[in-house]
Length: 244
Image (cartoon, rainbow, N blue to C red; front, side, top):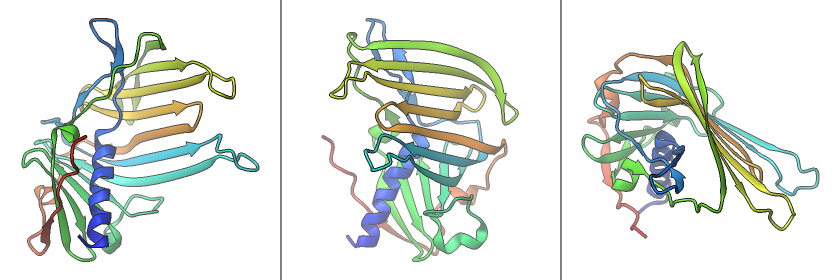
C-alpha cells in the first residue's frame, strides 16, 4: 500500500470513531457500571450539521504547564437510510466550503453496504474498508464495582432549537503517584428525535477536556449522491485491521 493509501485508511478509522462517538455510562442488571453501547445506525432521521471537536489538554508537564487547545471543524450529513458523510479540511478552523474540494478529506460510513470509504478529491481515489461489528456498535469493558461511580440526569433543555435530555456519569479512581484522585466524567445531551448527541463532553483530571458539538443543524434529507463514490473515482480496497 502507498503512503497516501495508508494515511487515508487511518483517516477512515478516525472518521468512523468521530461519527460513532463515546458511549455514556450505564449500570447493568448485576450492578456493574459500564459504558452503554449505542447502535451506530439510525434510520428515518436525516440531518445536516457542522461538527465541532475541541480538545483542551492540561497537566502536560511543560515548563509553564500551559494548556494546548485544538479545534477541528467538519460538516456531517446523515440520510434516512442511516448513511453518514463527514467532510473535513485537515487543520481547518471553519467548516469546509466547495472551494476547498481539492483539500477535503471525505469519509462515508455506509451501513447499508457495510463499508467505509475515505475519498481523496485531489487524486480522485476512494479507499474502501469493510464495516465490521466493532465499527457498528462500540462497547467497552465493564468498570469494577470497587470504583466510585455517580450517574445523574441533567434534565432537558433546548439546544439549536432542538429539545435534548442530558445525563452525566462521573468515575472517581484511587489517588495516583501524585496523591490526587482521578476523576473522569462523561456528559451527553441527546436528541431523542434525531437519536444523536448534540453535545458530548469527556473530562479527565489527568489530561483535560474533549468536547464534540453539533451546530447549524438542519433537519433535511441530504442529496443521495453525497453517499456514493463518484463514477470518476478509482476504488482501492484496504483490508480491515485484524481483531485482537
